[in-house]
Length: 417
Figure 1: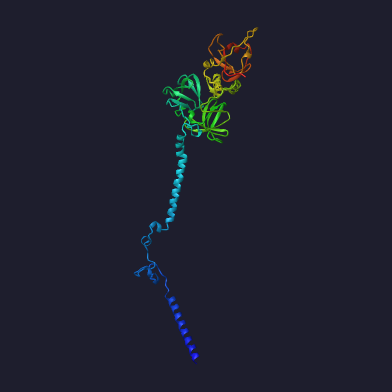
Figure 2 (figure 1 turned 90 degrees about the vertical axis):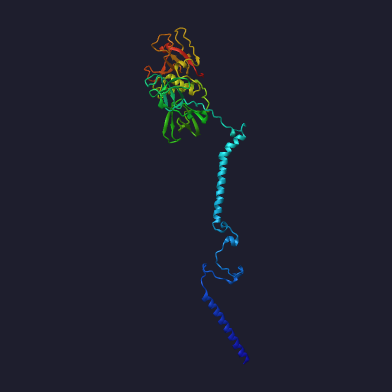
């Protein structure tokens, strides 16, 4: 009986405990709510954070007062701002390095090596030759220099593209008086030159080019360009860039163009062409065969024999005057022998390259006025004006011909082989 009562009391206690436990769990579930920051709750386990017991969970805190943090340290943007700062510093350093390499060092280092023979730091000396404001540079392929300010006047000579001249008078009827570098004075149109002289200053460029072909085209591009200017034999140009088969040349007025390397002679900017033998001189002269005759002309557009002699001598290393009278005094005089029987001139003594100065066919024997010039291209063959004086032709002659009787003097300019 006692055992049964003990069992019943134990069961009743367990039932009461289970009921109480279930009631507590149920009460907690029923009272659970969503907590919002704007409705702070008081949690007993946080009471020790505030001596007064007024601490509120979720309350906004001042990071400087509570934790000792600055505004920059307390924000999430701090990392981004630091990244931008590092990027700015890196960019600034990079720019400073570039300035040092390309701007500062080239200006500072030469002073440390001044007076040494180290080529890298030897500053090229620039001597400008055309500083006089009277200098002009020709902008046409060739321009006639006239005796008077008129196209109908006598042509004294011609000046070529990119040739420097000096203006010696004001404009008259569209012409100005000029003086060439070799001292010839005459009139040219005011529209045929420019005041800019950079294209003829040797020390401003890298290469000097002398045209040796009858003509060359200056193009807008190195390949597949259009023609900017057609220049003629003995035109002198200065180049700044050299590529395979082409040069970039500096033109009067500041433009630049391209010219092929064939048919041009490359020199140092202050060098002159090297003297060669007479066969090269004769070969250059033969390019003028069938050229239209123009009084004292120098180019394929119209030339004289003395003009052809001038340009062909210049490109083959001999400085030559432009006029027949001056040419007749240059070089060595050739003295001809005469046949003992007939008294005729032995023409075998006239060699290729010799220049003959002749009097007029209508003049009397003994007249020393030079009427025309001729050049021997082969034994018994002369380059001279046609009988109609319209073109330059090759003409054969032999002993006893009238040409032999017209000879005033013969000059040998180039070395014979």
